[in-house]
Image 1 (cartoon, rainbow, N blue to C red):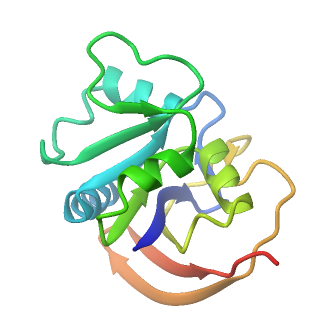
Image 2 (image 1 turned 120 degrees about the vertical axis):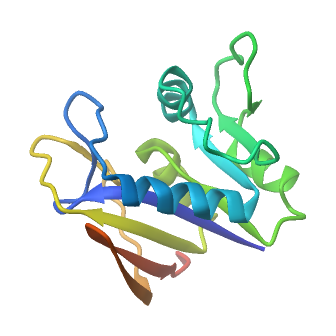
Length: 167
């Protein structure tokens, strides 16, 4: 089992603009849907869940995809995902999967990096600069990465990295 953080980011490393918007291209969105459907699961933070739910962005996903939201707040009525208190709980519940997908947002990504819970990071680099945007890792955290692959797609590239564990 490996845990993969999959994020679209601007050329300057921002995951959203200063208002929280994500102006990503269609090809990047399709990459994300394909990867999530192939994995059969997705762990996300509460803000990402709320935005995707409000915008109807779960519609393209295979209905069999198991969705988990890491949040300290209770699930809203009619939630389409299971809410858990920690990433470790979601990972445990998805332990039968070969790949566990993680997406959104920076707080979840940072906590999982700190806890050595990520094996890989896949970044779709979008051709845009979001000055004043939300950074992928919002606080001082260093982790060495090993480049695994570079994939070109219509309008951008995907960089795939292995994450070195902190000692």
